[in-house]
Amino acid sequence: MPIEKIDSLSQKIAFVAVIFGVIALVLACVGIATPNWDSSYTNTDIASYTLSGTANFFYTCHFTNGSYDYCTSRTVNLVDYPRYSLSYPWMTDYYQRIRNAAGLCIVGIIFLAFGTIMTLTMAFIPLSTWINLIPSILLLFACLFMLAGMAEGSRYLLYNDYSANLYQTGHLFTMLTLFLSAFTTGRIHFARMKEGEIIPIARK
Image (cartoon, rainbow, N blue to C red):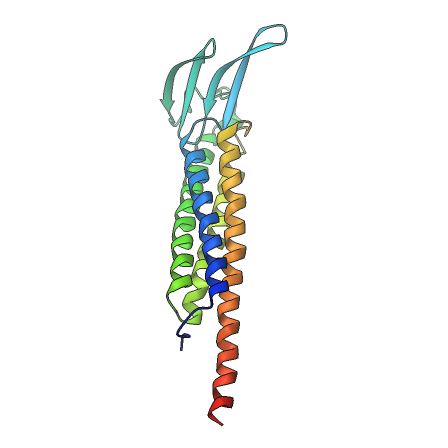
């Protein structure tokens, strides 16, 4: 049976985990939504460069003399994507790679959101031991899917700008959230084990 009340320290640790989870969620969402994962530059003069294009898993944007020009959604032929050319047969699977990366990263964000919500629920509502494992499992899946998405996308995109950095930082905060959530689960379980030992002694 779940304990009647969760100790305050476990609640505080879980609350810190939730804060980290929210930070991770914001960073990951901003990172995945903004186009500056792969930024390309054009040499305009000696030791002078200007931004010519940016790209993420969903669309690419172009700049003229450093000023925004237009954006193009991802197509099967990756039209306007940097460094892509149909003349290179080994590039033909890059569209599939980017699509897979986008899906994996989004699924990771979804797992992160539900894992954070479940961690908050676990901190204030006594649940069974097995249900308390769900937040950690969800956050573990979030870490794995986010990492898999970044690895898949790196087969084509060059992560050299702030959007990729934001998503990678979000992944780091997700790992911290996982650690704190799992630690909270362990504390709650340990408290129940102690309670189970104390109650029979008290009855004697």
